[in-house]
Image 1 (spheres, rainbow, N blue to C red):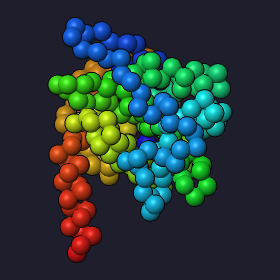
Image 2: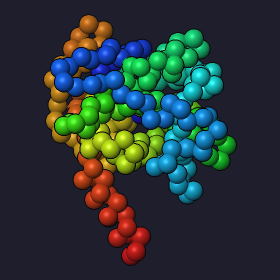
Image 3: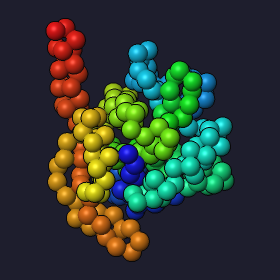
Image 4: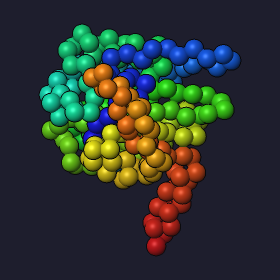
Length: 228
């Protein structure tokens, strides 16, 4: 369960600011001022949930670096994340200026970091969309934590950031991520040909998306099921 934001060209190192006439892409980071001790994002608060989302701060750099270094071989076929402490600290520090949100996925039971999710290429009106990425701690893959974290990310993006749509670009052979996105309510929209350059080759990706309307249907169905 790993892929990167498409704007990063397959390597999570920096997002080049995009300039577009009449469109301000200097996005204020709504979670950058949340202290590390804060108990999770408002849309992610659920006492029964196995995981919660937390904004990553410089105090999380060492733990995040260890997680990404430990999982580097598992991630390598899909995306390259920074792994050294200095690189990860810089990645977190400049994320807001780069127009990216980086959120840690933690288990409330022991506060262990089990993965990260990201939002990038955040576009305001008239698009109200963003692209997401994810990386799991290899020690916790296959436990459903990332699907739960992605559901919380979608809720945060739509409910708190006011976005209408969240997208993901995933390579066709990345079956684990496809299963996770399906579980989180995403749907396939088609193939983005030559979407991302990886090692000097332009690689096709499957475009996945979930919209505010999709989320409303998921919530309605869950309520109906709960009421029996």
